[in-house]
Image (tube, rainbow, N blue to C red):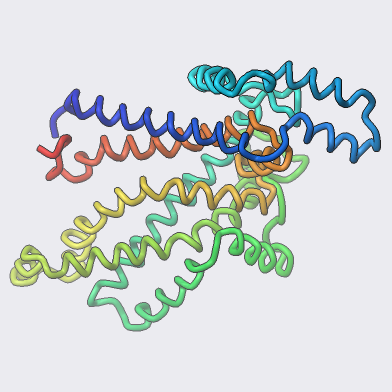
Length: 336
């Protein structure tokens, strides 16, 4: 594979930035279509807690002026786009004076770590089971057990999280119910903290893996069945090659390519499912931050966290698209 053509690279970057621009516009617009505003919602919460907030009307108007909510919507939109370019997401209304960037900096590493682990395990296990399911030499017992295990694919990740939480945390007490690590453990590169993080992250990761691996298994099985009828497969058998060698050298190697493409496309779905899982387990990730922001009508946090998740997904698609010729030498950039 030669260097990436300039025209192809510019075209892909254009699509990348257009995707981010359209997504950023949508996440700015949707909260403003909801009734009410974040300042009034904040005062209402204070009223329910304290019973009465003196001069609430003056406070509401002052905060609206402070955060620019009295400006015309076009002005707010242009200011919002400018802030997105510099990753300046403003202040959280619910946790003022904490900035949105601080909340994201605290939550994003947890979400990235959990996502990378869950996606990697799901992709490897799903494609392995799909290949085994389509392989003619697989024992009959496995061909019955693997489809039975796919029953979890039909349930949402949030229900899988509740199921695992009830069985392994409440009944068996094997794993902690909530949090990202034990209270009192000092965060850092030490065995106690790492062990606590793994223990707390096991069930959230399993919640994503259980409901996702079936899609990869079915997709891999379909690709393997298609490849079985290719001419090079008949030639490999005619040459007397061993069945296992044909499996990984001819079938898996060719069937895995469309699965890699699908991985980039489905990242957004995996992220959205993980957000709900994080909330169920009170995991210190973006999911908990987004859920609290929605309850508090915290526009800045909703916009900032959603924007970062969109950038992550779009970046993954871009990277996979650019490195695809490295995975399959038969493909070149620009289709040449």
